[in-house]
Image (tube, rainbow, N blue to C red):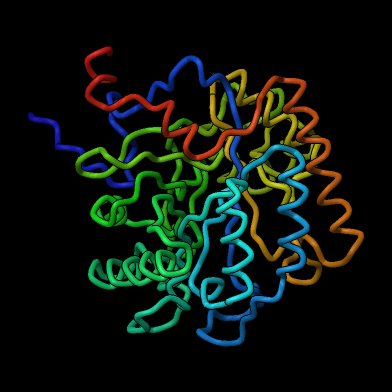
Length: 345
């Protein structure tokens, strides 16, 4: 039988020749994506209203911290933030100074056109009809171009909510890099995508393979980490076993984020990923976390102090491992044209 043609969609594992071999001179580096979005009650139903964009002082403080550390964040930005003159002016200054990059982040319930019913299922833009996803992406891209003078080339779906059409629509819209795939996570019980079994390293996606997928980084750590994701999934289906394995430090899943992950665990994850040969460590968090009271991770000033202490520890460890920050341009510059990569393989 003839194998089916891989259409490059983001819900399917890439083919072997879609894996990207970065330029050896790039080394091992890390990137930071900030999901730059409105503040809303994470425990309430989704709503087109009832949100704010008030965490600007917290964002400014965060940007100063990362600029001093030599980190150039990628602020993937959603529609309500773009509608704030103060936010757009502030972020535009960072981008103009070369201290940050502005990408796109799509929360469908607050992104025009508002044609779908607001619901948990429809909070994943990739689950919407193709025409609706296309129109929302076009509206977001146009608004970013109006605010910052150029169309975005980097994307992350809100709630990691890509679908079967997303890679093709991103290619058509001129995007060069997506970072929506959260490897090792399954959101299908919440109406979302299933990313189990997908790679931790960059690969080509989309029908023409002109889109780079850079997954968020997650490691499996502990004495049993050799069993990796397969053992972790099996334990999840055996009641309290998964919790017992994590508490005993035998096996746990650790995403690279300061949100809910202790620094010591993030450091273990960094070392595990480096040992596995992962050459781009992809960190992320949500912009409202930068100001107290908007997310469960920074509820007060003490939590914010802990947030920056987390980064101090992690950045110091990255420096000890000779892992430096990379910009979007540096990453894209380290990726060979797909034709040359295939010929070399």
